[in-house]
Image 1 (cartoon, helix red, strand yellow):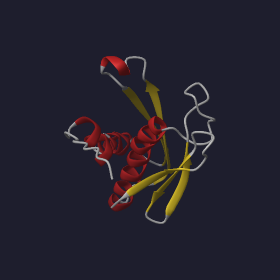
Image 2: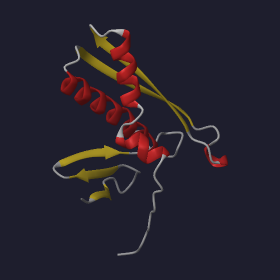
Image 3: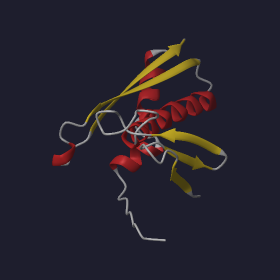
Length: 132
């Protein structure tokens, strides 16, 4: 699979991301030198964790027949030490439905094993950047 990003605004910093048949705008904040016309790359990184946790928990609950009605995942970012090598994310799960304490604990455990969480914490990622 290929993800492509191309400049959309020659006077600004807005770019267009294309993934399969999906397309959306990215930018950087005004403080970061952009026009805040879309999420920043850091926002997308954080959102990938939140969305992976939400989908993983939902699919697991469905498969196990758990009465999960809704899930919301909020990710709080602390990037104050990023330049020193630490980027902190805190994921807060809001679960609704007639779940007992054991089911809630199981869903929390499953959220901690979502594929993106594991990529961020357990897998060595190698990135090669080349010119076309």
